[in-house]
Length: 320
Image 1: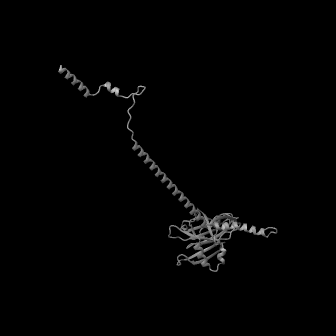
Image 2: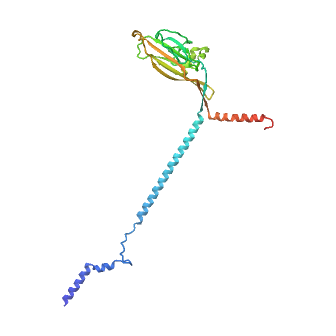
Image 3: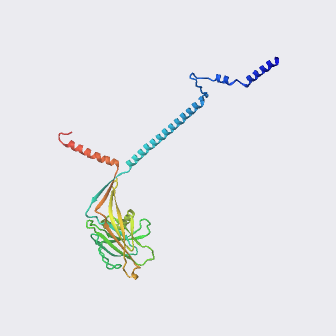
């Protein structure tokens, strides 16, 4: 009897050590009132989430400050640039451009530097009509007013320059032109050209007491151009007069040139000599006049009529 009781107690003790039965585990589970089983709750992680939100707020604040500083820098730069441009405009004059129509130009001076070439003919024609060449390469008529001036190069003070001054065209309505031909003996150069420059008044040259000094000043003030051999170079001139803010005046020539090939029908033995043809004509009857006017003087000009009108009103009887 004692052994059976001992075995029974041993069995119960082993079952208790093995764990509670399944029925007991089911009893321990919590059930909701409607019989559903509540899910297990995970533990909350408060501190990491709070740290990430604070970090994002700081980054966003830094970005906003950076954008604000960038916009402020752009605004300051634009304001500075606007003020600088306005000050530059105040310093520089305003250009007033007008066009004056004329029937006759003052005859310009055409200074040609032929070098070893010599003049064959010079004639004035009207309405762009240039008759065919009768004896190319031979001396023809010279119906132009010319003047020869020798002077020292104003830039080197060593070279002596020989200038042939030709009185230019005047009658712009009838499209007067000057047609010149030059001849150059056979030369060793591969290319040949003749230099020329234009100045505003041939009469000023003739009235000058020192023509040498006059031509030196012209060469220092005006640009020179070239026309080549074997072609007919057509030069159309336009005149630009500029009045500076201090009242001084200057004249500038603008040119449009076109080149036409010359068909040389001379014998082969004579083709070694180079021929030059050049035509000078006014482009149109308009003289462009440019006047530099500062903003301050423009304001004075607007004030002067008002003050003049007020003074005139004061002189009228019965008005103050």
